[in-house]
Image 1 (cartoon, helix red, strand yellow):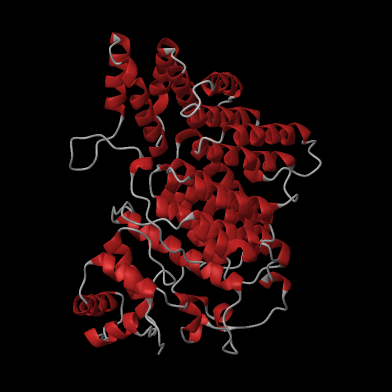
Image 2 (tube, one colour; image 1 turned 90 degrees about the vertical axis):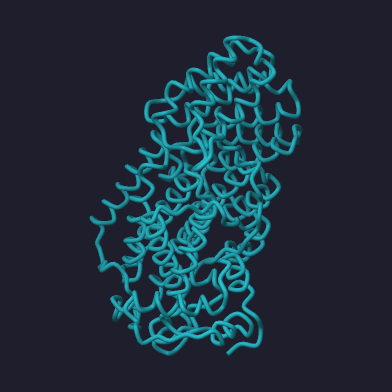
Length: 504
């Protein structure tokens, strides 16, 4: 029994609206449904979990995680509830009673989190009421971790312990050790999912990616030769980034952030710090999109320092463009221009001397111009003269886009249209906006709806023109309605910006 209150559990418990007695009854009912009819919990025990920090024994943490997940409409893990899985008996420890190595813990959390996410998806729940961890909290918590080299289980002597000896005891999907051919197939599946995401958005394939990641988590619980284990961690990192990006694309923001952090952990376990840095940069892009650029800069500082010079110049250029977008969102025009100049220099200096990682496949010259257009268009809110540069880069991005990047093309068109409206050229703005509307229905991306809403606001000053009035009506028709209401969705940047804790 502990001596301090479990503040994590107390905070989440306060959000549920349950009484302690009600939670005790729910635990007993849920445990019976999960095959543990002998479990009996009462109000006093719930009080001890919350007020004195007592940690319940298995399977209570899993039962509580399932209950809180369903109640709050977002994935809640054992760590989120303030319970240390390493203190659970038997299967959560090595044979000598010591905590599991970090790779084992990462694989466990990955498997649990994806399993919860799939359950949430099946029941049609959403995570709109959940809170994001702040960028500064994440970067502070992860700084020392990212700057140390992981002690890979694959590099250690092969030893028997309960996790390896009896993986079925973990209630996992019955995965098994795999070879090079199977890992190659998994790597190919990542490319297929990535191409689909770039073309159609994240909504249609998100569950498939999460399911694949869940299986990979199970595979990581088995011993493999070091070179295969690293590749398998790489697959996990890539799938976790995709799951996070797809979750962000459909508005599941806290879930997306969890996946980005999981991806960073998986990449580090595989010894790939540049991949870990890129995963954190995705969390930074998410923060900018949600109107929290200061926190994005905290995350970018961590991503860049953790990556160092190990990444190819073009990868570092990509990180610079994200930082520039955050600076533009704060009206820091001079800093933004300097950062974009560094990105251009890095991109041009890349002589392919370092092998280009697979996760860099979608960052090419078109994407460089697309990010520059977005940064300048964002800065134009503070400096209208920046709209001219946004138009130059936007047109070049569209010219360079290749087939299979339809979502990025839509974003280019919306950036370009917005820049035209800001610059006082409604005719050109109307033309680009209508081009975006022609294809926007073919993607599944909430982010495009947010950009459409911004577009609608920008057209207000030209609402007296008949053609622009028609465009505004088309924009309204394209925006989704809120469930149960007749109004259109508001941009996410206007929503509450709570803070929360992250596991892993």
